[in-house]
Image 1 (cartoon, rainbow, N blue to C red):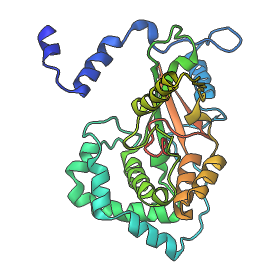
Image 2 (tube, helix red, strand yellow):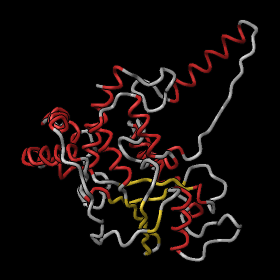
Image 3 (cartoon, rainbow, N blue to C red):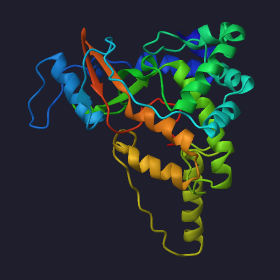
Image 4 (tube, rainbow, N blue to C red):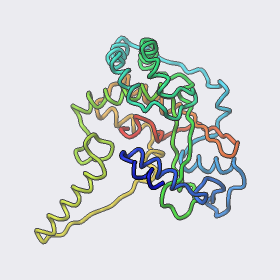
Length: 304
């Protein structure tokens, strides 16, 4: 073990060993405490409690494996929609998006993981470009791509793992969908957000910025105040369930305010409004339709 630890030279290697060693039987998902103080009595009840906590407004859906989505009426794309689709989804963009993923990652419901796309990209990219452009122009996403596997992982450092909020949902979506999201994310950042950028004090999820840069700026302000014998007043806020509770209409208004085009906005709205999540616990599977929020683990979610 000592020799193994001495050979760790990269952060991912250290992260993997930390993940293994930090696992404990005391923080595994089981029976959870309900708001009335009683405990869930079955896996199904536990899943329902997790869904209501982490996916507010979600409703129980029929079996996710059954093709039961009602017919969705779509508006015929305009020439401008097709032009944007052709501009966004070019061979080099799609190849970059596919290659940006680590080869072996957990797949979504379509069972396609990055290595399959990467090894076959010469043959697949011309086909994928046609599919991606059609999906984007029509504002429609294939049903299999909207099916999401959700895994709940324990949050580190929690004292009570009988609370549903002691677990974090991670969404495993299709890597074909994620590839589209990657391209769209890059086009938004290089287009509308270049002309109408986010607030300069926004540190999270921004290239070149992080928690560290936010702390450095805060520390600098405090130190300058102390040096000048002044008072530094700080307010610390935590937005509970920011990913889970944001509404689609608020996101739509935000995209419009930043000058994001209607084609992109329509596609993103469809993606968020037509998710079906599926969670499995001890052999019991429950499916839910979401009505708001962004998937944790989604490529576009941090930007949105």
